[in-house]
Image 1 (tube, rainbow, N blue to C red):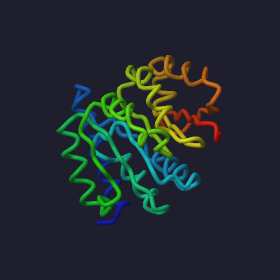
Image 2: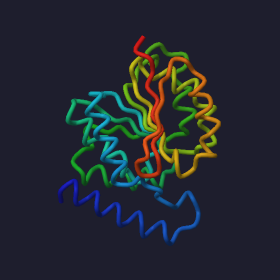
Image 3: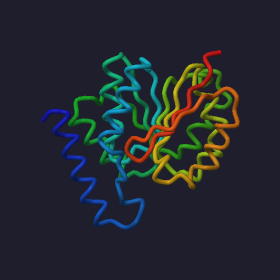
Image 4: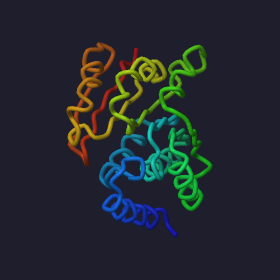
Length: 199
């Protein structure tokens, strides 16, 4: 099975699953295909080698990131707290042939981000962050997100047009930070982009 065939299978699975499931923890809530393509272009254009994804779900978005990362010699670390979704994603990664460029972390994103607070290794250690998780948590994560993102690094936040009110408090924090330049891309459910000043 090719990667494109696997992606198409996951798209169909996600769509069918989310029609049936009403509880958020059981829904896949995958990004759209055009968002996946957009992320891949961004990763390649920025030659991002150290990628962090917050919110794995079944791994659909991770595969887009990993495919692009592999092209530039990069690696994706993806964080997910649900064991059910971690297991689904692991199986999909193995089928994709991209497992070698993906590290899965099962934990609370806030805990993972904060755990490096005392470590100099975590400072400016990430080139690219894709945020697609619990939107109400984003403002609390902001100090850690900006700390781990390297100068010139790119933050991409999903659901910027589908759930603008939910990410508004986070957007306000980013917009108020002089170290970041932002843009809203009307792709898929809306992608909010913030690039950290190169110096």
